[in-house]
Length: 114
Length: 115
Image 1 (cartoon, chains in turn blue, purple):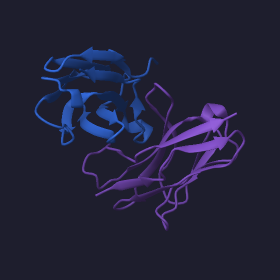
Image 2 (cartoon, each protein chain N blue to C red):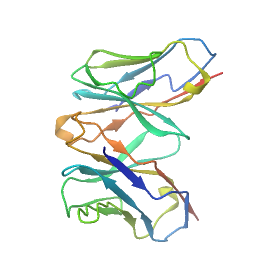
Image 3 (cartoon, chains in turn green, yellow):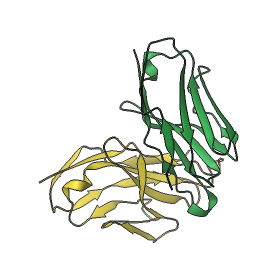
């Protein structure tokens, strides 16, 4: 199994630009999570999908952030417009019922907004 | 609400030293407890878990026992190696969270093992 795949691995953009982060979960997993990690705030859950449906987006910081999961094998996290304070590592994780709530994390996307 | 408190780092040890990273939690009911590890430049990986009181999770020489009476899940290893250098996260999954599979993570503890 290839594990959770995220792209790009690194993204550098200028303030005001749109940023799209992509995630392919492990095949067969029905839960998908987006996290943000910074030195100041640690690991924060942004949004959680179950069976492609957003269940809890209370962690999404503001309307500039949006996430979609059009099918079981793909999800995007979009920031529009981006700001320097959005600079962080963004992780995608997936899980299923048989793994007793274990989440499998991707390698992350390091976003730098100048 | 649910919360996880970890001992603050960074922790620096010499190779073959004994490791303890403290973790305590607050949750309603009977949460499942986890330790995740993050190696430099990588995502988090599950290290071990325990789903009920008095269970002991173990993996790669690491152990943690689910202590309901003290609401703790301390991570231990008898002899650390340089390759254990990483950030360690304690986490819980509570049935009271409202969302089926959300995990609540601690702030992480940076471990550096010197040769």
